[in-house]
Length: 112
Image (cartoon, rainbow, N blue to C red; front, side, top):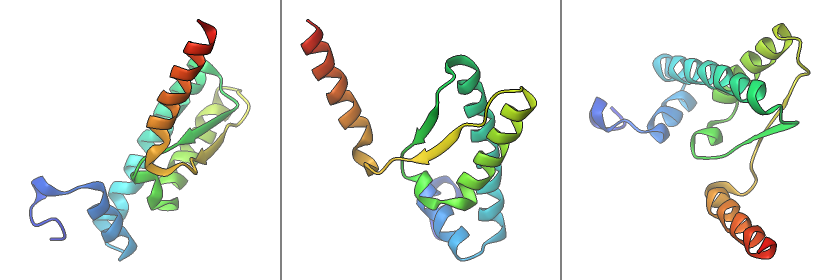
């Protein structure tokens, strides 16, 4: 009911409902975090990064989302006999993407 209709539900509605201990919202975040952990495990298999930094609105939910992601990533990397990866949240907030794009553009200009 926070969004008015199921078609209008956004991540901020789910995070607000989870903060109010709504069981459905908590389950959604847990499942989404679990799926994120699986996806991050695939990234680790492809690129073997030392650290993974996440950004965006949903990571601001914190542990209800990131905890299951971290747990699944640790489980899968351990099963694959890979070293555990650190999972961090960007301190740049919603500007992380545009700042990364700008940094890449400057690097390309310097290399030219």
